[in-house]
Length: 144
Image (cartoon, rainbow, N blue to C red; front, side, top):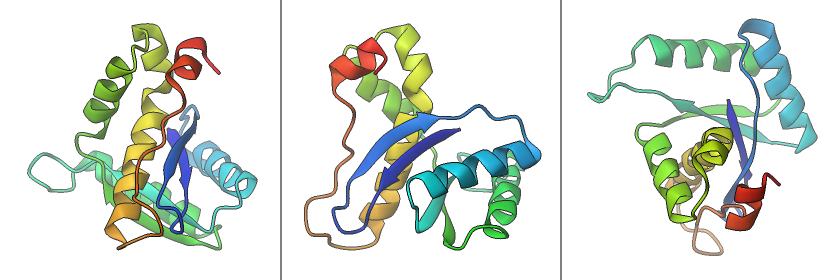
């Protein structure tokens, strides 16, 4: 599960980390711990819609996770269409000359930043031009 951070004021989303999904309470606990760590006021979950835009089984699982998190989280929980974000993240990482092995390690949290960026960009004008702020290419290649 990829995580990213961002804020409405700057309109910038940045990849944070990837946490291993195990399902159930573990995923909720890890997600809530990460929200507490960064003092998140809201949470945007990527909604894996089918190409037609219909919610299938994967989207229903994300909504279930969102409901579990919302029951224990004081902030707002929102959903954002995540179609094509992994492919877009892959293109960004290839352009940054990130090795195939390293891409596998960071693809999910780079995709999370793209999801969050889409959400932030949809909320109207911000103080600065909204962009995804990827980690430096050298950091991605080296594992920092």
